[in-house]
Image 1 (cartoon, rainbow, N blue to C red):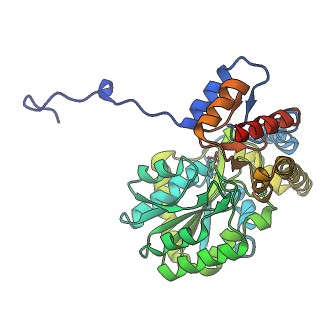
Image 2 (cartoon, protein in one colour):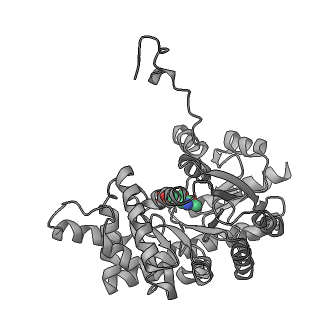
Image 3 (tube, rainbow, N blue to C red):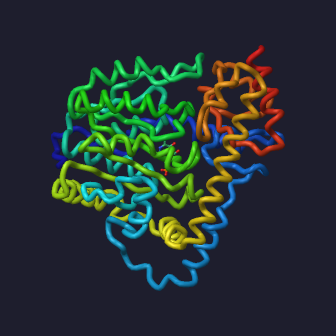
Length: 399
Ligand SMILES: Cc1ncc(COP(=O)(O)O)c(C=O)c1O
């Protein structure tokens, strides 16, 4: 409470400026560029051969059905659409789907799931440190810090080699204390595209088990890499071996519903009762933050997964997106031996072996927009732009 003797209250005018998210700044810069030939490979959405991010046909159909049949928009509760989570369960958990020690709920996208997962960890163990790979998706560290947990970096990727710094990663994780969190990308690593292979996942699992670490897996691109089951290998392996696991999942990419904010959080503990108690905390945190998740996108995904025909058609549309990602990767990889590593990576992102100066030059002289780090979206461009992109990148590497 302010008293006559207290110093002047601080107001909103006293706030320091925020350093903008560099990727959002890049999108704004590209939008403002009038050059018609501009190429936007900074963006984080799938684009088809024509350069568009269309609404999937199955989602359009499901939305129409929703408009025609939905009878109420009454509140659903903090868990959101429970049937949505049930339908997603086997897709994500595979042979763990029947494990009653695992519970899940709908969240506002993968971001909501990450925040809620870390809220749960901070509630249980405020001293936990979170091991985060370098580099990682730029929103990971702020989400972790927002719940008051500290971050520790583990080396993940060597840009010059186009390879995972696997031994360094393991060594860093070995320095973790029991209860510290290992944040891992389930598949299609953002920003590097460098995924752990199955043998590497098993070695990471061994360290996690030996050191008593808490695996938290962020899986935002299931189905964009090798296939739905293949991409969930790491999630399922950790569930095989660990009593406590958290998985933050997103449907925003694999159903192409980005702005509708569709995701889910999954919590495993050593017993059904402990999971029920943990979920009580999860619901409480969700209630404090967003009360309940937005319904529309999850309702459309629910309709798709419930209907055998729509589900088949979704799998085909997903395979179409995956095939485009992988074929553009092969095309870039074949252009120059220095880009060959791109053909061995997965998902939408890879990092080009370019300096910040070379990236800026591409932006200024060729209207090619990518993150300063050289991260680019292999399907950010339409088919007609790929040759010019490759020529410009090879030219930049030669300069
Ligand atoms: C690694 C990673 N995790 C989580 C997310 C969050 O996805 P959503 O849009 O569903 O919040 C993204 C989105 O770009 C991502 O790249």
